[in-house]
Image (cartoon, rainbow, N blue to C red):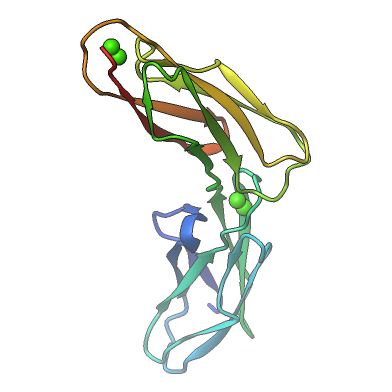
Length: 205
Ligand SMILES: [Ca+2]
Ligand SMILES: [Ca+2]
Ligand SMILES: [Ca+2]
Ligand SMILES: [Ca+2]
């Protein structure tokens, strides 16, 4: 017998966040293993995941580990499946697929981090960091405490724009309630996890 196969082990998904890595395992099934074998590796999409050009299964070993590295692109491109192919002289090709998940985030900032109840409002900005901005994106906004501050339900970044402003309205509650921290969460399917930021609503009663 003279063929081999490649295994990814338990990990069939790799996130591209921070260019994460997993190990692949390259195995030969023949039992005459006195000689090393040099194996060529290719990725079907090097914009998503890369592998070493070659890896050597040492003499007297049936397998060796190699590293699969995710590429942290700046595209909102969802999960992409990449096929890793291994080739070696005298062996049938080995192939296995791995899913590369996306890792884009929205950013949320506020003009003021502290607002007095009497000041009424401040401005928030939602930004997207991905560079493929041909499509508009409607972001859902939620306030953790609408008795202190409210926001519009949704805000839309237009096509070819990377940010949009919205208003945070502060509630003047006429109660002696001290300073209250309110968390605003911006979320959109595809950007994981959701982004949040806090403002402090200071009391004026
Ligand atoms: Ca991405
Ligand atoms: Ca990607
Ligand atoms: Ca209050
Ligand atoms: Ca108050």
